[in-house]
Length: 172
Image (cartoon, rainbow, N blue to C red; front, top):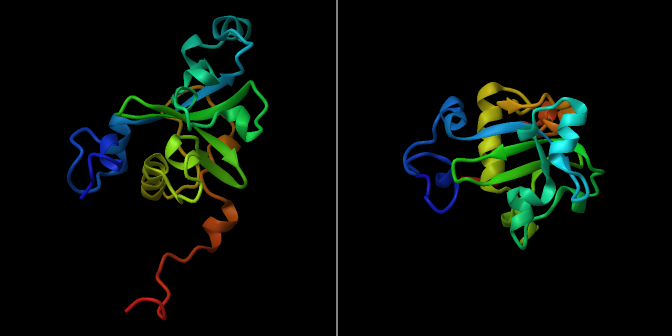
């Protein structure tokens, strides 16, 4: 059962079985954008580089920049401007997925406000999409083509060595 207060907010009706990846991508998307620091004007930046202006945003205009506990890309040590994948969700939120360590991490307040949390609903959605596509790279469903490093959700080493089964000695 998908709760309306969590993962269910990313799905149109919020309750029911876990939908297929194409159903999830009907209401949510992974958009390739250029994220700028506050000193750059998105319109000027886009015009000078012949880019569609809707795919050039200041980091504080993303949902993580509007939440007190959300983390901006620059707070993760990223040099801006940077090409990033931004999740645009049915709930109306827009969170960048940031290259961190050997994969991507969501910048939403759920994890930045409590860093011990393993996964947020946005990362869960990304995992389901990747599992259905049998890939470690999130698709760019709209926007600019961005480097693979900004789309690699999980480490290639982890992906190639992971065994999806429970240890026999820990579970009845």
